[in-house]
Length: 126
Image: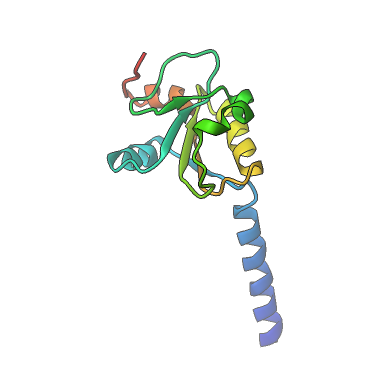
């Protein structure tokens, strides 16, 4: 009985850990981004097209559907931290998936994009 319970727990833990890493990137909230920006150690990329403004401290604007054309502007180190955003989250999600497919391992995507940023009463750069 103990072996069966232990095996069931191990299978459950394995299944849960596999589900968490399935996307290959991490969704972050506005609050998490604000904390990260306090000690910025990442490349911050706006992927929205057409351009509609930046969250302060943005480093680059790269169209979500042209990631491959901008590889020279991205870190050569595939473990470098990259945070992506767009207006609502759909374009940056696509860009995050592309970066993961290219081998980047430390990719973050802002949930809700700059719409959520503005809804929280935070300023944008135009």
